[in-house]
Image 1 (tube, protein in one colour):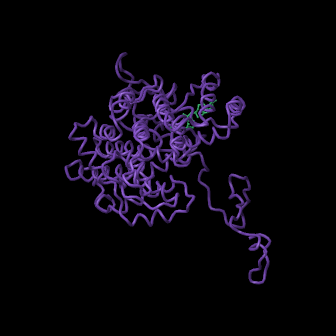
Image 2 (cartoon, rainbow, N blue to C red):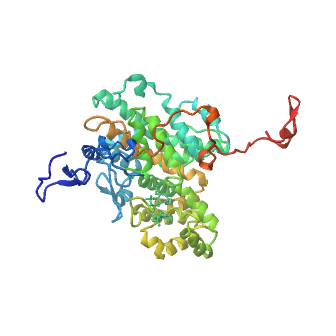
Length: 493
Ligand code: ACO
């Protein structure tokens, strides 16, 4: 970096002229990317009028609010071509995997890079199912939540709680290179946590489900598939030889596989961000779960159903779309940061929905969903912005047809996504050159240096966003407000 412009045409370099100084720099292009740190060499003297906080003399910064065009690492896991609607796990098209593979086989593929042989798969499957059992103490933890707690709040907390059982897997206790050494012992420790997390994800999720139903918890069964075991753990009420419906079991497995990974989405990025401090994987995965909870991410499948319920019937679709275009309403389940055409998963979900509806009956919201989909796909507002249905547009309808409560839908996304989170976490722990803590920069636009003002000299700042809001006191009854305290009545506490 910082070399004069001498690179001939056709070389993998970018020539940049800094017009502040007249200097020209040649920046290497590797895999069609430039390194943001190379731009640090582009420094210039600070103009007298310029803020010192710009740190101009320390080199140019690269701004990318929302990571719109920043590659944070090199990855071998998942490839998306958002313009062509292509999604591949480790090179295999998602359509082929959905047709021929299953969630746990795909999990092996995502985490270790190749499809397992028969014996490798058997061992992997058995290990995961063996590690699905949770310590009996965990029951108290789940029972401590209120009956109406959102299951994602329970699951996020439970993932973090789970880590407290495994001190041998905690770099804070065992040494910070616990997972980065790459030797046999370190790999075995890492893989054991991966197996535990995948194995127990269904158990934690099922417990979050049952606690809200007021049901006793169920020990994970033997002899069922991953999805089958999950259904059993949620639904078994003591019946003899209870077996989940195979069509629903298969549909759930396909949905799990489709949701297993999606490269640098918000939740995987959260896992890596948190994991980059070398914290234990349970804490990192809990952070991913929290990120997934949001309505712009995994919470969208729940939001779609609430939206469809609010629209009510197909006749109301045009008015709803007009409100969306005026930005008064949100069309959940449409649009994607990467896909600028239909999300390829949405076609498979649609097909899976038909299989499920054959046995559950069609969901009453399906017609409204179809009308909304068809109208949006023909509307210039959505066409010009390349907004098409994402996976969440249809998945909620299947979950609903299967009888899951709305707020459980993001859990059904989080359970399989544990696989993707761990694939990325493992890759980062073993990456060449070690783990670098994710510590982005900022562009400071706040106040320049100023001196502390004594209390009596201050002028009140009263703009709404710059002072604390007046908050309502919930839980204060009329009786409390009318009571007296130390002889004094208070109209409002
Ligand atoms: N409805 C209406 N307009 C939309 C929508 C939508 N669902 N999504 C994007 N737009 C509009 C934006 O208003 C913007 O318009 P403008 O250029 O006139 O201002 C334009 O399309 C570009 O949208 P951005 O918000 O810049 O796109 P971004 O990549 O930042 O956001 C996101 C992507 C968050 C997914 C967005 O499309 C959205 O909010 N969708 C609804 C929520 C949803 O379905 N999330 C699930 C995502 S998939 C997943 O997590 C599995």
